[in-house]
Length: 244
Image (cartoon, rainbow, N blue to C red; front, side):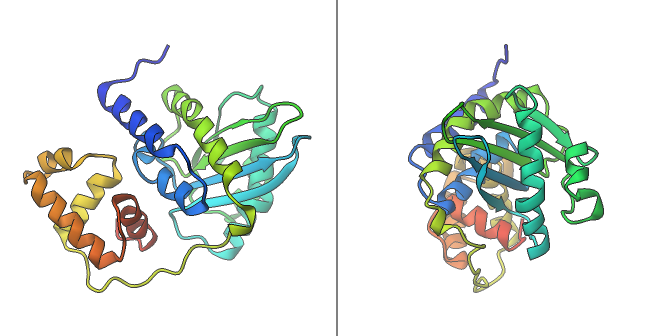
């Protein structure tokens, strides 16, 4: 039995609350960059939709790291099928993979097609005769443990429904990113880094030794600089611009 501490409970509840009603690719990506990232840190998420026969029907790649076209193509066409096959052979339980995994080596990871995917966690929902999904979290900072596998099991229904609700026709590359009107200050970046970790304004304030109001003001200025409207979008924009 896995017992969650108070912070994990807060992150999990926050993730579940914000995961209800995901319907677009952008929403799904932003959702995975908030408190979800604090529970399951990763660089790339492969979202695979399976048909009723259990074969791959569609692959989405949500990534906060910069990928060139060759790497993106390799992830969708070679890595995703290999990981799905590994998971399907693993009794439908979460599986841990790394760069030495036979499935990843066979998919070409060892040849540098996809850089830095050292640790990963794969789980899915694929009932017989029904549309299923499989999700692979790649580029995790360390080898996933049973605790993180449990988090993925708890959050899988929200990932599953979010992917099934997402119109396939809307899937495209990353949105064009505009350059900020000025560089973000060190304090603004520190605040956003705390937000990225899933902390509340009060928690960020205590960490930085400032007031919660000052944190809020830093965030509002950051929104204007980045051209965004909320915390999740600000973090996603900073990650895409490699500011964090």
